[in-house]
Image (cartoon, rainbow, N blue to C red; front, side):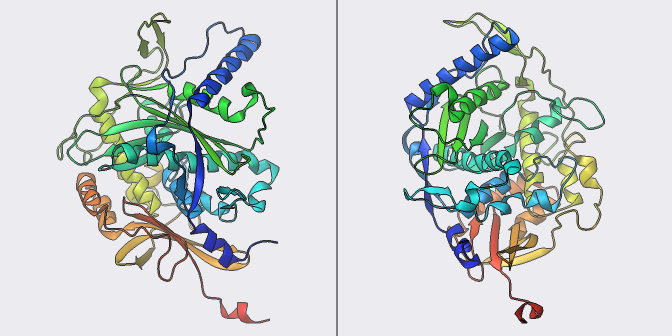
Length: 466
């Protein structure tokens, strides 16, 4: 029997622990899966050299390995915030802006007391299973990755950015629709930043799967281990300044693990430091981004080591001389994502290059196809502006709202990214930490000034009639 709308909203705002698996054994099992992948490729493609992967894989440490306690709605919020600009260089519509809403009934407390898929979540249409694994894998993996970065830099803000949206600015292939092609790459970048100080950047890969692994499942056949091994390959294709200086977080979420949803997590070390950006002038985030076209083919020099010879490999390398430009790129693309999350329209274009979708956002889209900043709500003491959508949950009309603090929105509209970052940092500890709010159901507040919330709408007169 399906849960009522009230029950669904209640469990969306209930904090539930999510299991994290990050051990030395996981590293060993991932290495075994990587070796099996290389053997299989050698048989099929006659490739003698093993694939390039991140060295120094290791488990998370300390508090990073503890269960993540969060509400299902907060996880959907992480997914929504992190994917606002994903796949929207050429199209932004309601279906993309609210793609997380389809999981409102998919998550609840399982028999072990940890978060698990509900009956509805375990039986998606076959054509949607891959989508569910990919999207919920993003939600869980990003939530763990964001907590890890916050734990390491507790006095910093963090911004999660879609890697494709970032890399399109400098590495897009020419053509009528610029793309990165099939080049392996991370899924996201997480920037830990504080005004007036160097930022730190983490490359993140996230995956999910529906495998029901048992003790009899061979290590080489475990989807989670193979996903981490392939994630290590993708992470190895991005570097700041020089090879192996960028820290990485690799995540694989088992949606049908025996004891509830489990996030398998590994890391690699690195500084990932960007130079301090000036508060004004052409190198500040307020300035329009200049053109760059870094080399991809044979761009990365891998020095000789104890068990390897020097080699040259392809990859997304940001040269040291362009680290300031990359810092601008992260800040400006992050600003575009904040505006998109609030449903802004043409104002987003000022922050994006042509390859990122500037021309598209500069144009007005036809009615009904886009999210528009047309909603304003006071939630607690704070006024948020943003966009909303009304949908039906078990035949009950429910409103979803996503927005940003009005003061911050106005700064972004005016192109004042540096002042926005200063003000966002100053306000970071002023927002509620509750999972609900008066007149609303589930609410997810973020310290960057954004909010995503749900509430049941009053019945219309025609719905009250028999």
